[in-house]
Length: 370
Image 1 (cartoon, one colour):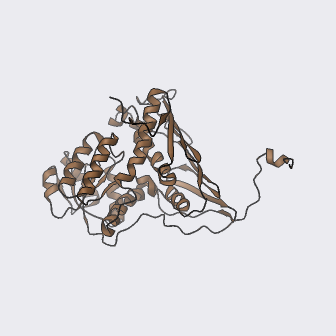
Image 2: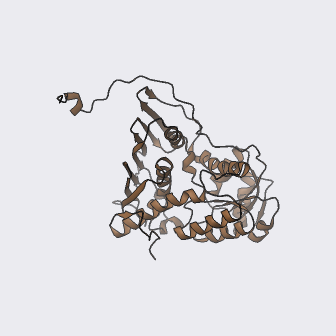
Image 3: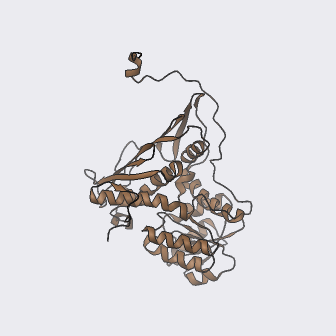
């Protein structure tokens, strides 16, 4: 048996060669026909990101529906001046020029709106998190499939350039079998003070963390077996909801960690690492919108020059993928059915943080408490 060398103890990296980055299909998908009529439901803060992305990518928004007609009109005037404004949801469901409903409302009212949309024969893009419990999600998925309709979830993080490139590199087998996924996001989420989001006990793990859990599922599939999570209030934070959360996920042949620090007032920084048995992927940057990606394999190190940004290209990716799926009559990559696996992980993390115990994903009860 050979003796280890000093460099082995010191974790010294071997010399590497710079190589060209592979050209991967990480950009937002675009349908051949962009004339499909889209109606946006809900004119809250996030709707501006949706509409800006759709305008920039040439999608056809024909109507904006909201109980607040003043806000809906302002959104219409800013992004799609020829779209009509309405507060009559039933009339929207009957409209022949609307094929897709983009439902951006809060989750507590969204499930009913999705049921009614599917019953009216409309394809649906649901805001994330998809639903509040798995049983409701399964019912909606079954309803859509029974009617031959497409139901997708606005997991816009899937088309953040760095996450999309890393996902496609992993799916292409460039790092082999994934054995580790480690996400650390440090940012200031204090903007929620005074908004309805502040009332969410599981704001970080559920409403924001779903992006991390969804990305994890996109690279490991259904291999996760258990989740252990915690959340906490940061010293001096003003928001009512805890802004700190973390989760450890055990999966077949590997492990994952997700750390969310929403109380980072200075020096925001985000990093993602994907470790495989044939290579590694890393991203690092001062925010989710600016990231440098690095692929390391036996061939050397590749650093792709990425185009676009999560906000708002990620929103175009979510809708574009749904439109492509409708066009090609296939399941969208961000389908409601696929999102159930992400939601399962997310709900398990919430349950673990509440109980202080690890939650196995084969457990029968993963619904939120009371």
